[in-house]
Amino acid sequence: MDSRKAVVIVVSDTGHVENHLVQIGEGVTPADLERTVNLLNERLIGTPLSQLQKKINVELGQLFRDHINNYEQVLGMLERTMVSGVSEKLFFSGKTNLMEQPEFQDVGKMRLVYKTLEEENLLQQWFRTQQTDGLQVSIGQENQLEAFEACSIITASYAINGRHVGTLGVIGPTRMEYRRMIKVVDSLSKDLSKLLTGFNE
Image 1 (cartoon, rainbow, N blue to C red):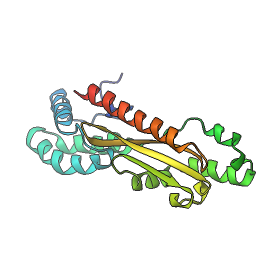
Image 2: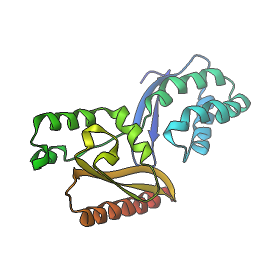
Image 3: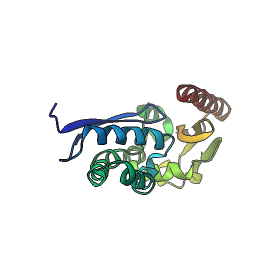
Image 4: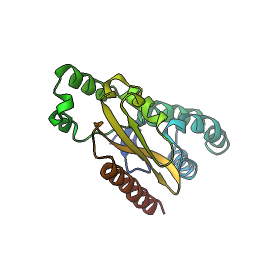
């Protein structure tokens, strides 16, 4: 690798890993990079992805000024790479199972559901409204999204040491077996919270 390039590795509490190749500015020394890595590891643990930009600019910005000779170049490097590249992620599995349900035999209805599932920004906003501790059940029009008016959605938050880090859930017809699915979602969220907390200790 070029001597003026480095790899920034971002690992979230949920296990998501992102690699970013960065160009090291002229005048940034190995000592500057070492101090930067130490400060990032000390100060960013537990910071939500949505707050990284603010924390780097405000809290870490002052520390960089105090401890790193070429702090302006280091801050610029971080803003152009790590912060801009990190985002909340949505993951889906089993979308085709919806097509097997009689409620979704209507092509237009199914197309609307699939289109909505592809609109990541819209779904991220919707999930943020669901980010309450514990389990939540939304039925039909309670979902406040036209595509999901024929659906029920069961969600549950998962956490690390009691701090919310994500949400998981299931989407299905309003006639779903609520008792069974609520038990499944609740158990998964608790098991995932326990597992992630164990990794973080």
